[in-house]
Length: 275
Image 1: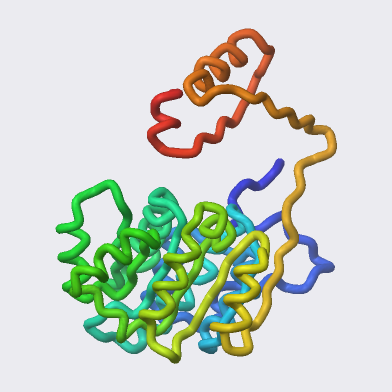
Image 2: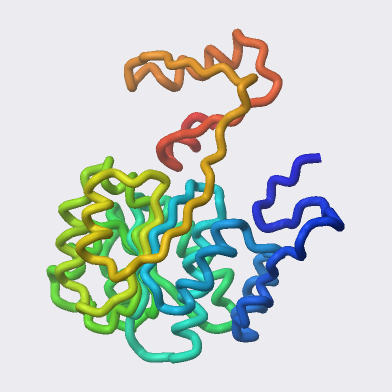
């Protein structure tokens, strides 16, 4: 039977080397309790290889795709570092390309940080800024933001970057594709000179390589092999107008013999509407 949980150990093989455990990283008790609360058992490949350099304070370039466990790979060591040196200021900045991803990361902080008291605020557009502003002014230790809304808050003068110790660019290649790179460059100009930079990206386009060369200090590299679809799967592209997409999907489900299906949508609203 296939195991779909990336942090649940696969069937044991007595001939293999003992698997790395989260206890091997010497996390503090509250962080370890958070890991157990989230039912994480064995680190994934990206977690096992990324956590040690992040704990050391090194810059890191990690090539890994969605679903590899990369969020915990950067959150856990960063939360460990600020938990051991508490301060009433925002110290971790995570940049994400979409509201949905920012909220997912925020939820992970809530789970991992419940025992330690570490909190985060998700900053994104499409909602009123007042609640986000209150969390920023309170010195919430972890800020998770989309680039544009982060700059909006900075424009009003109450977002202080001076105490930021680490910045994470999550899905950097998607931010490049979505046209956020000018905003990313503006954000870097606002940050302290000495800062840990963690870059997570499935691919490494030239602008990302250039940023790594100019902004990062002797970055360590982690590369996790991309998962390819089985050769038995056929792929098709159907050009269709935006307004006709939902009707086409419904019609396909009704007319084609499909026993099981996974449907991906660009937004949460789109998924709810199709449902």
